Amino acid sequence: MALSGFGTSADAALLAAYLDRYLPRADLFYDQPRALGALLHLDARLGTGHAARFLTPGGLWQQWTQGPPAKADRDPQGACKFIGQLCSFVQESARHCTPPRR
Image 1 (cartoon, rainbow, N blue to C red):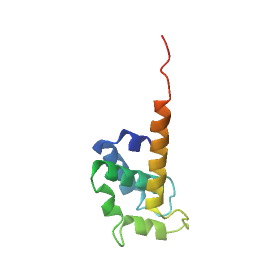
Image 2: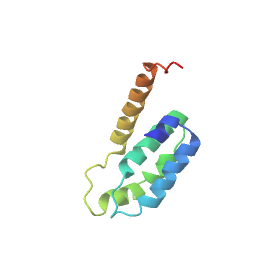
Image 3: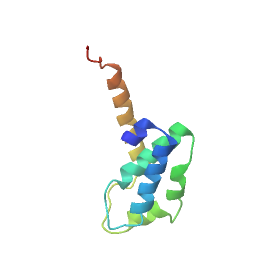
């Protein structure tokens, strides 16, 4: 979520590196869906296509979701929408915060 909020190309590179490391490990279930959702969110904001290589037919995302253990969270677009909602909430909340007086 934080990397999506910063919204830079360097943040997209960090998310892609995370996915490169953990998607080949179908036996590990950490934050892969949220990381891919965050990368999709950044792609939309930056006009880039970093996530596309993970989503190709037979690609790392498909391999990871089909590997054991069973993974209920297989919808990267749903994760992207959730990350977008979180970012909107944070931005809206920040507008209502008053900086402390010194």
